[in-house]
Length: 479
Image (cartoon, rainbow, N blue to C red; front, side, top):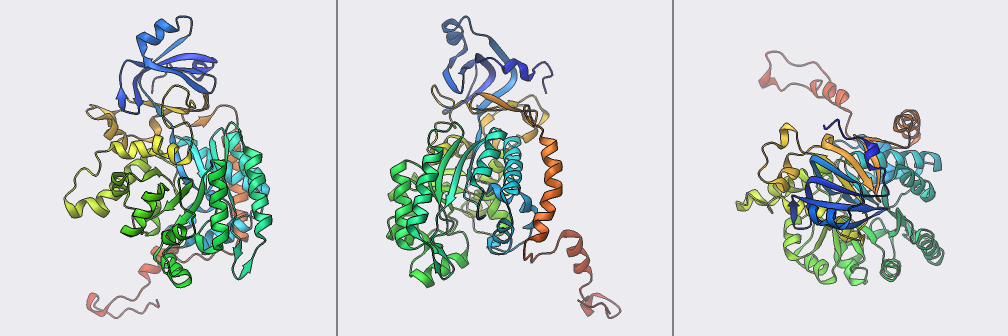
């Protein structure tokens, strides 16, 4: 990486930045510059024009660098960072056996630590915005907000509003009051944007689904829910309501431009049309599909149909460039190979969905380097062996770029991370504290893990009886 650059070069309130490449909505461009003034892009255009227009401003040239919008994670679970490595090999609906038990044990202190750890990981992966789908902990939204603010990441913060808990029906009026206070508390905040969530449609009454989604529409915020993620969830919906999850949301009037549907991996043509006709958006989570054995969302088809899409991690791994690679590869494996589609979009759609598409589904003025937008951007080193020679930069970012190329992460015009580490708080101290507390939190949670850890799995595998046809002597080991 270029050792001549230093964080101090970005301390000016207003300055021109001139990278080798600038990622604009129409693609990468050379000989361009940006003016960052405070927390926004004040101007974007050809370098010579901006120099003539602003002769008194300092100019920082960025040779060998790409300046691009920060990645937008449209589906995260910030309070699950303590347990993400517990779910390897687990079958579907891990929330019932791992996440609900674990999150139920978290108090405001541990919620703060897990959220700040997740925020740090997201920033290191190039994400400047995360959309949190709502914690299952009984308290702690303020702790989560404090963690993301201190880390310096933009956060769409979901408050869970379901009015059913098993056979029990909760006080709908009380929940709606809490929702309204949550919206009011974060209205106009620099980094935190309120959102409301019902984790899955089946844990809310029909009037509650309609009311929460309608309140989001009125407030101009996002209504989040997981839909059609697992076969068992689809079947449960059919048994209980006689409708598939998206059909159910459509029937009760909960779909619309405010609705953000996480996963949506098992949609029928009818449900695709419902999503399209109501202008609902989808968070495509390809790593979650691979890790949890779900189907893969028909993201390329959705994009072609004009359904609004963003990419999400689902809290699996906050690495923006690897997410891009998975987004393309999952489409090719699941759909492209069967029809001889060797392109699966040509690379650029996944880059677009990870930036401006994600910002669009969240209703944020970021994700695009344009005058007036929030100055959330990355400084990426291009002079590395993996990126040379360059022929198609957009597609190369999808397939070849790595997280370690991210030199700087800027949110709201401020440099938050430099070469992977924050400048104004001690990330290593946080990690030491997490190492102690996370184990205690997990140990006390009634987690039911089905798949063994690797060392135990290896041991148990080789202890299985060997078939007689494969050995000269009968195995005496017990399974």
